[in-house]
Image 1: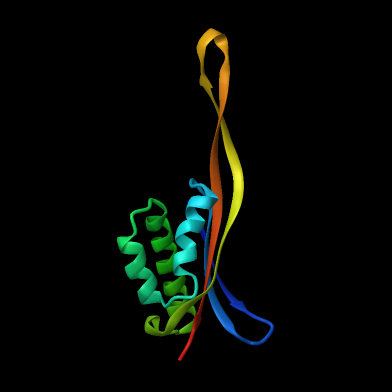
Image 2 (image 1 turned 90 degrees about the horizontal axis):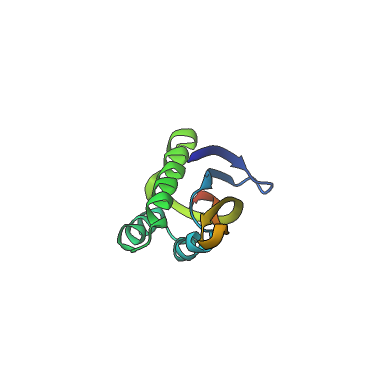
Length: 125
C-alpha cells in the first residue's frame, strides 16, 4: 500500500490537503460503500463512523483520513477540529489474475480487484 500526499491549490484559491492510496487490495464497490458514508462529514465524525463500521475497508480508509488530516495540519497549519472531507473518490485499478485448478486439468480464472482511493480535505471555520 503506497500513499501519495499532496497540497492542492484550487482555481478559486481554496487550499486543500490531499492523501491517496494506490493499488489497495480491495474491491472498488466495497470501498465505495464506506466512502459514501463519510463524504462531506467533518474529520471527527468520519473517525467515529469508521471506527464502528463492520467493514474491512474501514481500517485502510481510517489510515488515509488520518494521513490527510496530518498533511493539512503539518503542511498548511489547519486545525484538525475544523477539517471537512470535501472530496472522496474511489477508482478501479488493475486486476490480479489467478487460476484455480479444477477437475480434468481445467483452470478457472480468479480476479482479485484493486482500487485507488483519494481523500481531499478543506478547512471550514
